[in-house]
Length: 312
Image (cartoon, rainbow, N blue to C red; front, side, top):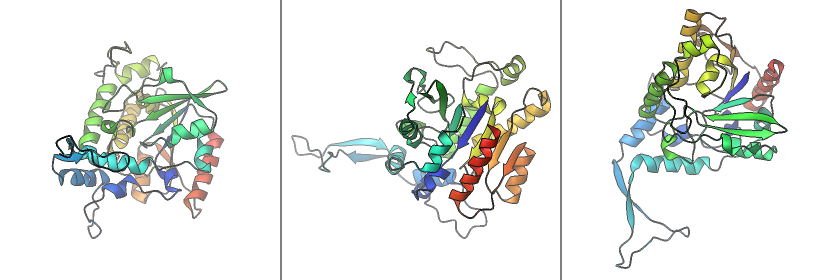
């Protein structure tokens, strides 16, 4: 089984505004240790009132006015308004040739930390159609099993949006509050405490150790792939504020030491040029690091995709 995990790197080839820039409100340029993006987001949210009055505006930009000539308003959470501003920027994102090449690889699973719909539009442009019966958007806040399925010539590609998506504002994962709560849900999934909704009729999911010992025959969540599929990470900075992914990598290594490499034998490869400390940390967690000495990101991604193809 093969999986691609990608982030915002391919979008940045198009010179788009990243969400990190949109939430950066505290100047830490002179600090020895920079403030993580997740905490920058909390700084932005918590510097605003909890709720504010939002005015209703028509598509023409005119204010809605009631019969008594009062301007119509609605009370809305400041955090929701901030997320909506990020959504409006991300809706402008488009694909590019290299990203299309990535999606065309002979891979069954794609995981992404991106919230946008560039991937879905690209699959459609590449003549894939979505099997909507396989779509799972049942989660309103977390993304344990948020997925879509795209098919072409009987080849099935699963897309897992592990940090939420634009159409569901509440699912977009940006700050510490959401990340830490998410880890709690991931822990439940791994330790036999997670239960799917009634529609799935799956009951409580057994512990990951038990499932690995018995053999995981069905992928119920992207989390399963971390323990069972070869994963190629590309276009993802994997900053230390991605605490959910780092935590999962440590759990994988712990279980690997406990259960043995016979049960957890998948390969994880990270493509990038991490600093020496991060490179060493990844290698301690049994993640292979592959770098390119070419100058531009476009050229680097060309090298990385070429290397991934060797494994398929």
